Length: 228
Image (cartoon, rainbow, N blue to C red; front, side):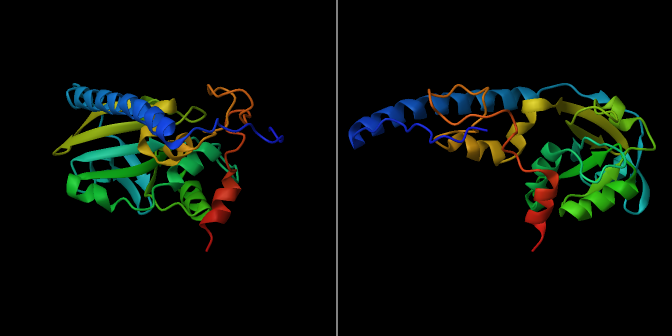
């Protein structure tokens, strides 16, 4: 990790700063409109019917259709999992720790939950250990995680489903940086003068940069943050 004093942005007068800011805002507005167009295209995607999977929740086995909890729309975050490990993926742990208030989904007939291929006993113990507030389900008794692109030993994944009665359809899926739009973490970092401070980013000479995720807190750190 870089330890030397980083370079500073050039200093400009207020008029020059405002002019450059307006130029950037024009690009930001264009990007926002492009994201609106992408969201519109996402709403027009076809869907595919999936099997009647059974997951395991805190109260035992539950059909996927019932994971919706009466809602018509469901988002699942598939948490990476290493059986028996005290601390799971710090990326997944930190990412899901952002979601502490999900009530805003209620009026939109939607729900957002975590699914892990680990056992429900391990999953719930880890949820408590790190102070996670989302609802957790285990896919250890079915092929749901693997079929949805997140098998045991694989990466993380976001899937979106629509329920029509007891029939469930898969409408969208993303992974990697496609999940960034769900949280506030990277958006806040990208507002900063030094950005994420990762060496893959296009930054001016002398900006502090370090290996990807090297500044990301560890899973046990997130657990400490969650402790009053």
